[in-house]
Length: 223
Ligand SMILES: O=C1O[C@H](COP(=O)(O)O)[C@@H](O)[C@H](O)[C@H]1O
Image (cartoon, rainbow, N blue to C red; front, side):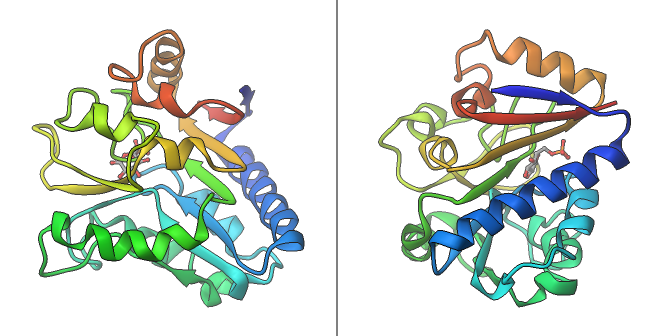
């Protein structure tokens, strides 16, 4: 794991977008199709704004979210909405996309179907993660029911996350899928997350889920 600090968020976004484009280009040299898993939330938009313009064979890139909130794809809390608006545009508009949320079904009922789409693209070629101040990553939340199973090295590809602190159920990639990515980047902004990340490195994953996925991770931080 290494931590890179940036002068500001704009510099971080440019540098991370370039790093991701480089990682994807390298992966495309060796594989017909490569996979890119990205977070939602408030952090990755500026990185997506740069990455979507990268000169890559995007029609050979399969994008998926690290986790999804079970809301319609046009809802303001939908991670898919952010990804479609800010990443799957410009040159990246021809990338394939695997949604984690299927409207009209309980999340548990659609896991096998979605897993069957994800299995062929594993291990993930490139992974971008975010992290909350509570040290959750993707939708692996401290204290959530089923966390131990989702952290287990033999966990299935996906898990359903239901917590008291979030307004909706979620579907998330599990720890072994995230940990197994070939190229891994964590993007965090602000002093509170920097401090939380520091605490996470000495806590067990049950208390700090981000700690389960840090091997080989490039951590990018700006105030
Ligand atoms: O709920 C979520 O939280 C994390 C962190 O989000 P942020 O807004 O603090 O950047 C995010 O990585 C994840 O994809 C999202 O569903």
